[in-house]
Length: 168
Image (cartoon, rainbow, N blue to C red):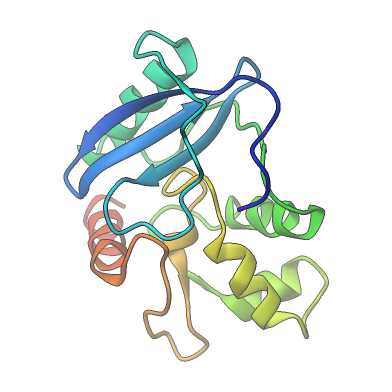
């Protein structure tokens, strides 16, 4: 994760079937969604303000609840990319093009952004995705269809893929 953003960040928590999630936003939009336990690449939240009434955080919690109940397949949230290099942000944008209930590979993402030889860099960028579930990094598989890395853990990735397959 890159340096802490300068603009004030607000946080709240959401209880999901996969454990507590940390939601973060600023005045421009949703800056992040992470699992609290077992998540790699968590930001330093020491300067963040807790605000359960922040409109973006409330909307994100509502849409995540709808997603987990099988009522929502796409998110309609203002995403504000606070972290990441231009390359990482490009990779994260490509993840948004993988439809609900479908999967792609790291190679697919690399080809889609015009860097077919940068599969490892794409994988590293996906691992830094600050918008877990909302930007669907869980839909990316290895070239042979195997489950590979997920910053929230492979058990959660397995759950999310099965959940989407059941509600597609």
